[in-house]
Length: 298
Ligand SMILES: O=c1[nH]c(=O)c2[nH]c(=O)[nH]c2[nH]1
Image (cartoon, rainbow, N blue to C red; front, side):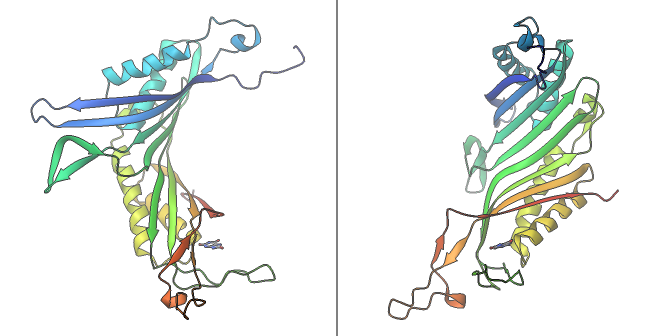
């Protein structure tokens, strides 16, 4: 095999599922956090691929166990901190491990509220939207962290237009000044690199950035009279950059989930198009896909 190169040697554990309860003994209120993690290791581990030498391998089963122990011994929120903690652990515990990549998906458990009173220990999965973190922690380099929102499904029944686009022999789409707009928002924001673990620990903006990104995404979507998905995503991305100084770049990816008008005039002359449209046909696909990546001007 001397004529070949091992270009990539990386391994770890995927889909480590963890749930943690945080009990406040004084108030009796409990908080919960459920997440799914992927942990990948890099370093002087090539021999296990090239020479069938398992001595450098920290078993993926041990990687999973380590996540449980770190979750027991430390805070798991904000997830950016927990990701960096896991990375620091592997890079410092094993001298031959030089970089750790951690991705975390936090699942929604929203506290139940009855007659305006938050329940002390009951929660509801109010949607499949998740909070995400992708972190790469290097032994001799900065920690890079990208936070995000995935799968925020939104719809507005008016306040969206689409006209003025290229019209040629391939065009059948009618221009519209009033349409349904629906999308499942994937948004990520890249933090300026953190030189040390302590710098990650000291950053108190992770939760507020996530809250700002959610609010900006929803409020821009709701309030803007959108010219196109392109226009709306750019406005959202710029607003997040303006609101969160520690963030260098913001990325959006949105499918345009089409709702087609249905011409029902064949039945007793019913009017159901244009300003009379009330019953629409939601489409599975194809859907437009609009991407946007905005950064600060340097
Ligand atoms: O907001 C939109 N952007 C497009 O690029 C596009 N293309 C299309 O058919 N409908 C839309 N809507």
